[in-house]
Structure formats: C-alpha cells, structure tokens
Length: 310
Image (tube, rainbow, N blue to C red; front, side):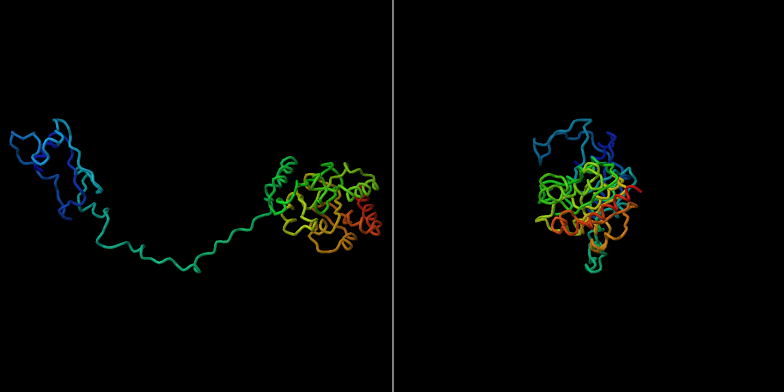
C-alpha cells in the first residue's frame, strides 16, 4: 500500500500519524504532518497482497493499523516535536563515548581514610537504662569477649539489692561457674565469717564481681575483659545504691578505682567511687593462703563498719 494512501485512511479514521525521531533516510528533518494526502481512486483493492498471499491478516473498516514497534523512540507528529528538537535526546554515536568514561580514578593513597569509630564496651548507654531483670538477662546473653565460649554459666550477683554494703570481688572460680553464684566454697565461707564479725549476714549485703564469667584455669582477668564487663558492674552499683563498697583483692580494687597500686598501699587510703566510700582489703582466697594477713583484713572490716554507722 502506498504511503499516501495509508495516511489518507488513517486521517479518515482520526488516527494520528507517528514520526520516527531519526527517519531511516538520514538526519534531514521531514515534516510529514504538513504533507497533504493525494487523491485516491475509489476502486481500492482489498484482497491479499501478491507478496504475502492469503496468509496476511485482512483488515476491516474501523480497524486501526498499529505502527510497528522497534527499539527507536517514537512520538506523534501532533506533539510539535520534529527531528531537529529531539535529536539531542537520541544516543550520539558519532562523537564517541562521553568524557567521564575516559577519566581515571585517583590512586588509592589519595582516597580519604575510612576508619571505624571506637566501639563502646558492652553498649554503655543501653546498659545504663536497664532494670534488674533486664540487666540480669543481658549478662546471660553477653558475648562481648571470648570468655563466653568457656563458661558454664554467668555469675551475676547475689544478696540484698538495696543493701548498705556492697562487696565487689574479682572473677568467678570453678565452683562459682558451676553454681552461678559468687563467693562459694572455702573463700565464700570465710567471707561469710568476716561479714558476721561486723554484724552482717550474707543475705544482708550485695555481692558481685568485676567479671561475670570465669577465666579459664582461674587466671587473672585481662584488662580488656574487665572493660567489657564494666558497664554491668556500674549498673549494679547504680541500682543497689550502697552506702559503702568493700573491694576485695587486687583485680577488684585496681579496676574499680583505676589504680595500679598494690592492695597493701590502697587499703590504707580513703577512696570514693561514684560518690560512695570504698574500703580496699585482701581477697578471702588470699587470706586462706596467707592467714597472717587476717589481722589487717579485720582492721579493714572495722573501718567499713564505722562508715556504715556514720
């Protein structure tokens, strides 16, 4: 079918004529919308095309012919856009690739450094808002250091949660790890006797440790392990609100007071932790090995009792 005849049919049916952005004949603009259709004889053949035979679909009056779709973009001629004002939207294959494809990235040494911020131990800000139940659960779920892989269970703390005296030890031992309670076994029995000497039962004080998990082989806690556990202990002190803290042992005293002095030197000094008086003394396990130091420990207990009565 000739092009002019096709356009006449489309115009009679009210169908817009579509124009490709770049006609196949070249880049010259073609204003087909202004071209007038030529007269056509009345006897228009409707039979099958000689080239296609009877396989071609026969069109009926009123049926529109859809333009063939290709990978080109197509626009209606009535939109007022011709080849000239849309040519800039088409892919320009003659000018070569854009400049940014040729740009070379800077060498790696010129890139800005991307350093990770220092992580706070054990999520200090979140732990500080926990109540007793949530805090105890958080401790059981803690995996902040490698000790979680060897523990049988965590050792949270025990005693009166509103006690006037809070006893802080070092780390759980083998028996504490099995029972989940601090200061059991022979060291615990000696601590109970020391407390009774100043008129307090075990259940009248609150007992906790610097670490909540047992170090393998009962070794001393490492500084990084104490740092991971520190938020838990800080929250316990804040919840108990004791009047006096008794720190027993080098690890407890040094980590609590951020000091490197020996117990022998610290026990003769007055300290405070978060506004709470701290008395430093020897660990019950050390007193079992060095009974000659029990007299000094008794002096420390008397000083703690005096602060409680003040």
